[in-house]
Length: 139
Image (cartoon, rainbow, N blue to C red):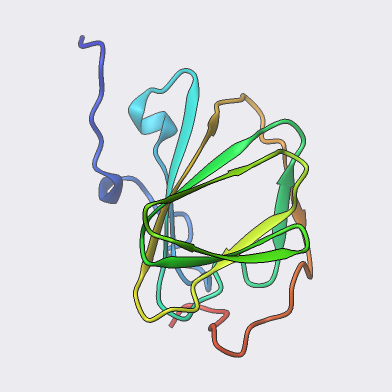
């Protein structure tokens, strides 16, 4: 048995594949056998609202969002920011956050946090109004 692991993100299940969520959410933590770090690849198609107007916050988990492709529009509390590829966003646990892609290019981002046994995520409904520029459901 080796002391490292390599996983192709596209080989990890996307739980939203058969849903109306426009995008992908590939949690790689278990596939990697990671013991301390949680990592998820999120892909958002052009002109799509991945969280469909909702947001979320955490009780304990700080998150890093690493944008590797496109420009992500994020709402962080009351602030809305454009986050281009090559940027990293650190979000403290209690800050409500959400994101969408208003651009013409797909967005790819990696969410990284400390691994915990039980989810401490809380969904926040009606966090921000639907964007007329972003579809709310998958094609």
